[in-house]
Structures are given as C-alpha cells and as structure tokens.
Length: 114
Length: 114
Image 1 (cartoon, each protein chain N blue to C red):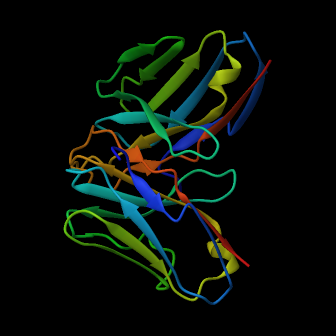
Image 2 (cartoon, rainbow over the protein chains, first blue to last red):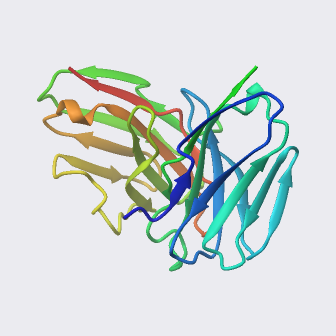
C-alpha cells in the first residue's frame, strides 16, 4: 500500500487550460511538501504546507492542505509549457525529525502542449 | 559548489560488477537521503543518514546494496554484483534536520547495467 497516492498519474493539456492534481493518504501528516522535477534534474521544492486548511499561492500555482491533514491539491491556472514536469508530493512520518525519511508519492507527469 | 554533487553522472557497467556511487551533500546538512528512480517513475526511498548513522536500512532493495557516510559529509552507495533491474537513476538529497526542511537534490547518477 502506497503511503501517498497521487492522481492523475499522467495529464496532458493545452496551454492556457487549468488543472488540479491530488495527493491523498489515509494517514495524518504534520506537514506536506510539493516538489517539481524536470527531465534530467533532481526534484526542486515548490512549497511546504503545515496547517490543516492552509492555502498557499505561488504565482499561478495554488496549493491546499486538507482540513484533516491527510490530503493536498495543486491547482495550476492558465498552464504554460514551462509547467511541464513531474509533480511530487512528499511527507515525513508524524514521528518527526525526518526519522523515517522523506517519502514521495509516485508523482503526476504533466505535459502542457503549446 | 553550493549544491548537492553526485558522481559519476552516468555509469554503464556489466552485469555482475560492483559499482560505487558518490554523494557530496551541502555543507552543514546533517540529513542525507538516497532514492532510486526508474524511467518515468516516482522516487523509491532507499536509505537516509542522520549524521553518520543510518537508523533504518529496510528500504535497501537487497543485501547487494549498502551505503555509508563518513565525517557527516560524503556518502557512498555501493551495489555489488549488479543486475539489469538495478538500472535506474540514483538520486541523493540533503537537508537540515527537521520535519519541514527543504531537501536539496543532486542531479543523480544514471546507472545502466548491460
């Protein structure tokens, strides 16, 4: 059983469209991170959400942490080809201190076509 | 450099040979992580270090895999008697210790076993 379930696994849309990707779990987390990975590169942190119900905006990207701190969503408005990449959510176990390592979901492969 | 450095960037090896992958973390980062990423897949957690200690080695795929870290800095991941299924990109990340800290990734070592 995957600790983190990400959906959809693949998404290909036209430039200018909006999209939402999801990260879900049956476990409660104290915080959750979203990373973006481009081909040939390592993942890069986009945002950390720590409070249930929290919403953070990063330009055209809106991140939300569920009220119960079990799920999160990433919404992109007016997608651009530069948004293409693998979007990964990640958590540490509630035991904290990174004791069990930063665990990633399998990611959403996003392609924005011009 | 200021980032996480991994070497080699590419490695082609014959089945049955041993390989050693190196990771130079960001100076001062006490946490160091190794992940494996197969083509088009998410990140598979292998092992993490807090300083020189690896509390949990259960993420390593088999006893052919081992990792060490010395001086709280450089880490090496060794794969003995490589198999074709070991082919993947091996990513290293480092961070300060704590739940919400950002993990900084290297560009990875692409291992191909032929």
